[in-house]
Image 1 (cartoon, rainbow, N blue to C red):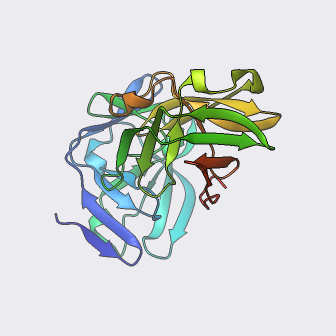
Image 2 (cartoon, rainbow, N blue to C red; image 1 turned 135 degrees about the vertical axis):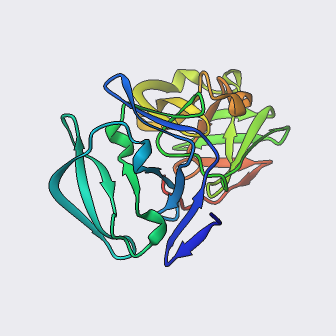
Length: 242
């Protein structure tokens, strides 16, 4: 099957083995998943019905999509609306496939590596480059970081992120918040408030293998702080994190 596009929906096959776990057991195990871009930001996995090992119980609910047609909602065990299928979709390629709700599952794996938040987008790229450029971060006029040893992370669709050594950060101005997030490309992040502003800075203590170069470094939201690069104040970018 070649990649296809129907309206705003893009579909292409993936060669990865994909497994979803719920209640301690695999409820889906396939080497024939489809990547389906229902929204432009990232794809969802659709799994052949034959590769879903859990019992799918129709609960009478439906969900209509202008492009995909009438969807049927299913429960898996005690988890309501855990799966969705479009058996009569006008997009023929989706018939016979099931979308398991990502958050309804306990864990997802691509091959033998756990994946968080959503499937990895094969068209998203993360480059992490060392830089001697002078990076200075201000919050409310106070310098909270000053470094010439940054690692700059370039990620498709997002502003550059400046990851700085903790020795170049005013740690006395940072307070752990307990907030945790996960990224399919970088792993698990922990957050700090800065001068009373919640969750302005974050770090990946043990990032995924492809992002090891930012392990233990601290980044700040360009959208919410003032960042100077070689003395030039950067514009605050517009992004989903603004």
